[in-house]
Length: 409
Image (tube, rainbow, N blue to C red; front, top):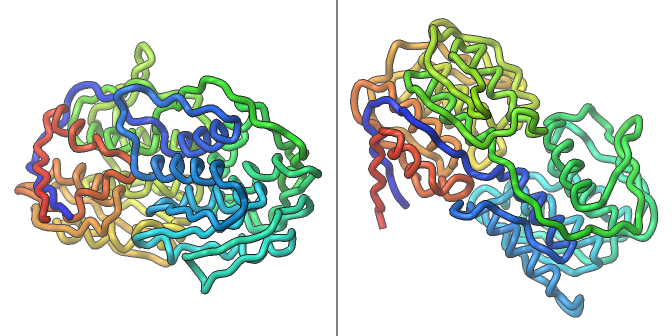
């Protein structure tokens, strides 16, 4: 375990955000199924989540099918939800385990629909989960408003089956950008699914084809530096795709709505402070942006309301509670609502100590908020950034920040 002690300051300079975690999961799976490997940019340390997916794919593809393959998903919800149907499509017996809050995160969508298509699921409501049997093609009915990860898992797996399948949504789709990213990555590796009125039609007997693939940069991680720029810095973010299918590309427009000065110049996104004001934010399609947006809202003039954010209750932490608690401990004014947060902006935070809740996005958001504190800020669970952005504090300090990570043994 570790704490990070942060001093007030300003970040200035140029930063290259890490590869998109969302895109990297998908590319790693597609490439492994094709017999190749995803091409990650050199020099980027892989996050714990991506390593979990790579290790899991190696274990699945090395399995002879004669026994149970054990898959340690770490704390990665994407690894778990993407690979359950992939293992079933390969006809493998598998046991999925995990740590942190992952064993409590919902998987009921699969335990309801997979047994209808030949797969026995054994669980007491979470992890460990044991599956056995050959997944058969057919009709898969599931909700669209629980997590798009279940849809992605089926989209990745169903092309491997011998017959045609249909994914039918029983409720409106949220986080549609993540499904678009899945379909885009599948196409890059030679596999397709066809849009249908209530979901997708997935032809069977398809094969993933190996190719070189460069994972694009991560808009959700870039959001922390957009926040830092909006709150007083002068930052340049390189490597981002302005036409990305990542839903979190909405960060550019949202920080501009706060009042930050944002512009593209020579393929670099530049951000600097402006007159910041509170705004209304519908988080249904952008749940991962909420911590960075909340940190910014805490230091804007007026009130910010974040709504349609219920899914944040079941992330690595209850992120609505965690952000309200952290901001309030540091002198902010944040309150939970039935589906989000209500944040009254203050001129500055006072400093102090806040819990990181072993959640990478909470720790990074509070580190950005600490830039506008009157005194030092201590945030617990600094090691949690390894889940998605191992280089965050290195980049933070290279830009002029003062983050001192203390290992507690």
